[in-house]
Every structure is written in structure tokens, then in C-alpha cells.
Image (cartoon, rainbow, N blue to C red; front, side):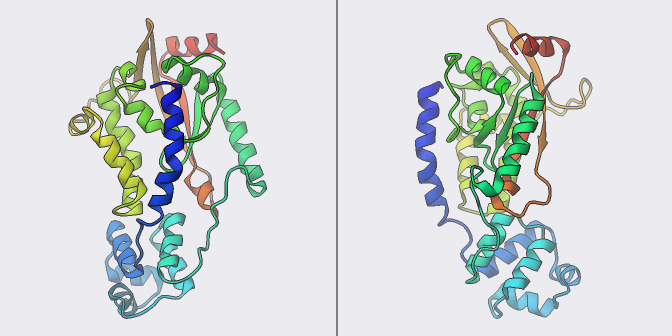
Length: 289
């Protein structure tokens, strides 16, 4: 996969997002049942923690009662429902969304963008990425762009597209980074964990579920994830090993989110920072700075 395939992915993103808007829950009762089940709450426990009568919760889940806007927001907090899905539940009940979904370029998010720029810069000479909930690339620092260009055989001066690049697809596609990922079978289960969580949040038929199906359909991925490596004798984390052009890099990552978000976009941002797992890897990135 090179620059042309990255551009093709960018062109199809808008169409998939438009189609996904019609595939979420459109019934409040079904959404409430779904989230209560996913959180492992009985009606009694939800009643106790939300201070809403169990009878009323039962009526809400059967469709015999209609919720107020305030009640939906309260249940969303108690059940720790993602902001995007709280908006979905509000819409299903006939209310306007409570949480905005701004673009990162909007003036209201200038301070957030500044904070992200700062974190990406501080991570140098090691890579760092900002991705959304589906692991679409939003931002990257210089070392991350350098590593991506190196792995995809792109010219040094060619910019990485800012939209339409899915990091999980790049990692698991046998024609992209996976061919240089020595332990990709072990890494696959960890990578899919993130999108599986989003698919559970969105419910059946969502864009996250569709992406999960695409990833599992890639050659060898399903079989690899069914037998994860549980050997913990060497390192306390799973390092990914990349080997190309007689260079071997061993990296592990951390995932950071923004605290106390009140915007869907901010709530769904993830900062993935890469760290060297050995001195040789650290020296390679410092030499390429």
C-alpha cells in the first residue's frame, strides 16, 4: 500500500460515514436495554444508582413510558455511555443532541488543538499519532510521518494525508505495514481490542461494527486473534517488532485521552505515543531526527 491507496481510502470515508448515520439505534427502549446489559446492570441496580424507580425503568424499556431529556442524560451518566451514543438516544426519543461534534479546526477547539500539537512535539524523536475512535489518522508528529513513509516506500518529502488513513488497516493489511511487522499475529488481538470496544458501544450495524468485520476479513487475522500469545516471561508489555532493510525496531505504545470532555470529537480522540523497547530502537529514531 502506497500513497495512491491512502488517497483512495480518504475518498471513501465520507460515503461510509454518511451511510453509518442511519445504522445506529433508532429506538430509545432498545438502546437502554442494550446499554444496561452491556454494563451488567440489573433494573434494580440501575434504579438504585440513578434514583429512578425500577417500575419506571421497566416501563421505559418496554416502551410504555417516554423519557424526558434530563432523564436520558442522567442514565447516560450512570451507565457511562459515550457522548455520541447519548446523542443517539436523545434523537431516538425525539430530542435534539446535547453534545456538539465540532471539527478539530473549529475556533472553539483551538486550545485542544494547541494541547495536541504540544504533546506530539514533546514525543519527538519518537512517533506519536492522534486518531479518532475508529483509529482514523487525525494528526501525527514528524517522526511518525517519517516512519510511515519509510514503511510504505513513500518519497521523503511527500506529506501524509490528514484524512482517510486508518491506522488499524495499515497495520493489519498484508500489503501495507503488516509485511514488516514480525509478530503481527500477537499484535492483532491487541489492535482489534480497541475497535471491538467501539463496536460494542455503537451496537449492531454501526460503522465500528463494519470496520471490525473488514479487519477480521483480512487474510490470517481471524485465525491469529483466536490464539493470542500469553507468554509474560520476557516483557511486561507486548512490543511490536518491525523489520525492514536490515533494521529491526521494537516499540510499545501508550494511549492517552482528553479529560472531562463535553464535545463528541474531543471525547473520541486518542493520542498514541510510541516508545523504544530497547537501546537500538532509541538510537535509530534519534539518528533520523
